[in-house]
Length: 483
Image (tube, rainbow, N blue to C red):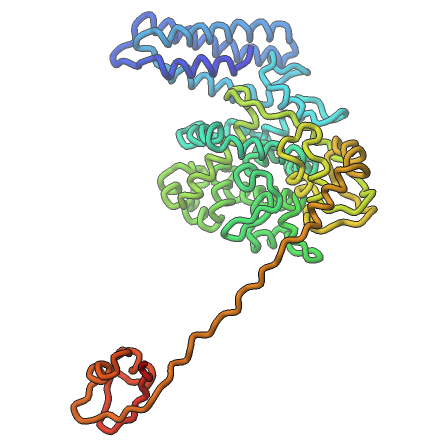
């Protein structure tokens, strides 16, 4: 019994049902009554779960969702039935479930297994209920209650699920391998993991070395001056904005600073992160309870910031509820590991010899770069160098990259030389030959140019530094030698 199955039914409602005007019929009112009963039943199931009565909770939940599915199916073929009422209930049930799991159950699989493993981490991590709350709570408030499911957020959801789906998936994979470096800072700052993922997905897609046209850098795209405010600078020639752990710490400090300023108004804080806190403060004034989408605020933001806020919130929402939107993130074993080079190699060479180990069809270059941000991928690292890698690659490195044909092939490709074609030397334009011309009575620059047949008034004027093309009788002018 998953809410995802309801999403399918509700999608059909939007296509099939029509909302006629006038008073609802008795049949429509009966469907609305079933809807209300289903919603009440779902809340009862949650309460029973919190009280530890898991058997009763499962039974109540099953009955409620069956009633909701049945009513939504009938609405599609009932004239005058408004599907938006069913969408609203669906949205509300999603919000109710966040962080409300009692014991070790998740209300009949209401949370996708990949999310459960994400929240639980590896063996020995905190239990799902506690970890799930750290994912979904912002300073004790439910993250889902802070995300308005309005038009802009819904449009952003569609973008992530369609045109930007590849970036979302890349961000997920990149984040899973970076999680052990980035998540602890957020957890310590009492910030939800879903928000970290939303910002990461929108800002860089999880590419640690990303740099924007405006100069923002790193996985969370700090401008240089803002980064300096929060301890990101240059360390032995390395820009620490590219360090995922340091960047996550600075980002968490920035968000908590702005949450205090804007009284935990998450929309305004995200907008300030993209558009600048000064601009946001001027737009908001003293009313920190105002919605980001209020025209007083929204109309003063740049088009980029108007898109940025709902995009971050939508990515965070999908992090929490992938199954409810027919989305399945790939399972990724992000447990960290290390290798010690047995032979000199660059990250480029390691990428070649590792190939598609462990089913990584896109190769391991991005992951190796992200986990070793201080290294130039083209530079060979000496034997004995310790590299950060996913633990699953420790065995693949030993079997593929120490001996055998693959490291030899990788070195051969890496050391190949490309012919260098020297840049042609610039040829200086020829200096025109000149001669002297004495101005006579009746001469004008135009008449002189006509006599030469090869120049222009502008050229002669510039050669002689004339103002307003003025000449006088007896004046010696330089003029080109015309051939």
